[in-house]
Length: 276
Length: 206
Ligand SMILES: C[S@@+](CC[C@H](N)C(=O)[O-])C[C@H]1O[C@@H](n2cnc3c(N)ncnc32)[C@H](O)[C@@H]1O
Image (tube, rainbow over all chains, first blue to last red; front, side, top):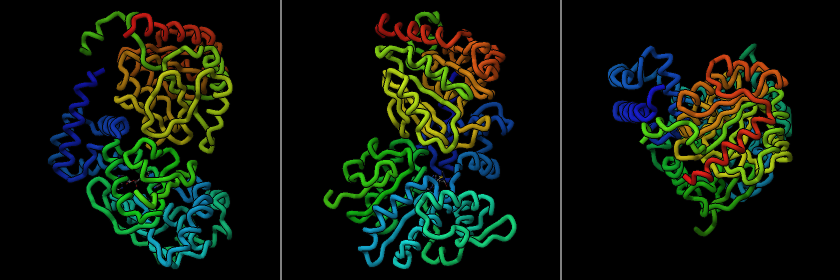
């Protein structure tokens, strides 16, 4: 095996090239995973070493796009971790009701399944009309799919069980219109959703929020970048606003942990303290 | 520094961690090994078992009942501590970072599995180099074979469960077939061997 120290340097140089040439900053991503994906791309790229990829990255945009596809992990599903949505119904919605109008930020929304899931919950709880949901991602391709809201019918059917476990009050099939293999989410769910491009590594705060959903995004970041993103969330949340992270993401290991209290540990729902 | 380490005979290596992979029939094998490791066994043990995607920590809870060390499903970025067993949660790959923390990831499945044994082992090879022991147990998959090669190439120690003693021999056999396995042992022997290897640390006092 090649000396891993040398390859480590090569990877640094590759990430630096990507950043300086295209503006995408993967230098602060969780290293082990980024390395794996670079190695996978290396095996498929026909290059003999990571350094051999660097001139291609610099001079060939198409080559970079291929690499970027390896970097992009956008797996998601409707009502992923159903108990989280149940906790939102029981512990977050009652407080959202106390605001005449509230804003939700879904950071790293990928293809949008989570956003529609939350929209359904808010609709069933009768508070959707008061909401504005900002759904953001830095990957324009997935964001476009989120905006379209068209999914495989079979996948949606599979999600029916999740919907029920999430405390669904109606019939999940009422929320989409299936035509053969594809199904479109109901238009009423989209009314209060604004999709836009936002990069947690380089863009700034996003208005005054009451609820921030950022699930399974921070695991791709190293600690510095995590703290940056969490800084954005903390800055944009109102006092008493909620933060919901992925099932395996824990505020304990971060800089902002003392700014929040735990609302539901298993669902990873936190509340920004009234007084900092 | 690396160079100098690599030249040392393997018997002077003090290990930093044990990584283990299992699939079908894995629970029994894990139970036999972990119940044999005494509480003063220091090395952290990282476990990837192929789980049903809906597993809600039940595999880890079962292991906790038989293991003498605390068994946890770690969160992302958790620091790897001595005298602990870490079990990859269903649906996440569990990787090791060079800074001694755990990274969870939702990358695509490897060998139809997430978590994947290869993913853990390959990252452990990079993070620990020769200071890691990899153990591959019962399973009806080929996951882990590539990872064993990576561990071996980095100078780590590789152990496979003797296929004849495994409920499902395919997985340990696949690893053995790569030629990268140092020792082929029964689970009882694996337990004893780990205790022996783990004790080196305190003897040398590195
Ligand atoms: C695994 S998906 C999570 C999807 C969804 N939140 C869930 O948990 O089901 C991770 C998403 O984070 C996005 N992402 C990664 N880095 C980002 C960044 N720097 N800024 C914004 N989004 C990012 C990816 O494009 C991807 O869509």
